[in-house]
Image (tube, rainbow, N blue to C red):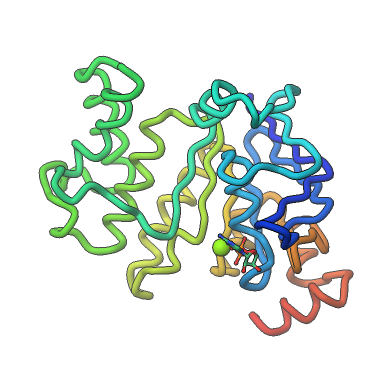
Length: 243
Ligand code: ADP
Ligand code: MG
């Protein structure tokens, strides 16, 4: 039962502050939708959680334990529990779909190949790619490749999945097949934080929506309140432009 809490988080790129006093809670089974203008710090939150950018103040607490990002073993342990999928899917071009999904669990985690392959087949069927196991990435559409990337992340058996604009690079007609996959995960109770500009989707799938601007959380609440009755002027302005 994962539970991720961010408290009073500041982060900087060099001397430039990018996150200020951020409080955020991703409770077990929740789907937290993260929205906000470009440059508001959404990706930085995910990068900070993963230890790619050290917090300069505040803390990130996983299941009641503060993560010490100065300790590589703690960062490794966290990355075994928290997986991320980015806009760029970065599949290995010289490996089949099945190999792409199996490589890390087998080579890095040392799990039995047989067991991992069985699980990978199940995951690829779940994302609608049961007939593409032997295909290479360049034989797939962008939407199919992104679904392979999601299956690859799930093969790590994460407790929390972070999705950063996973449909942003896709042609419009390929977006819905990827959203269908995420919708399924949400319905199964996967704990997720989703950054997306697909507002209709965020509204539908999120248990809670967080609106960010200028590295700060401006407002958060149930989707209906954020989209239909935002309290803050900044949120009102953003929402009025996107609807
Ligand atoms: P979002 O994902 O909401 O679009 P980001 O988290 O990517 O926003 O960026 C937040 C701010 O940090 C922006 O002002 C951006 O220009 C800056 N930033 C992002 N990455 C870097 C970097 N590697 N070095 C310096 N500044 C960066
Ligand atoms: Mg981003």
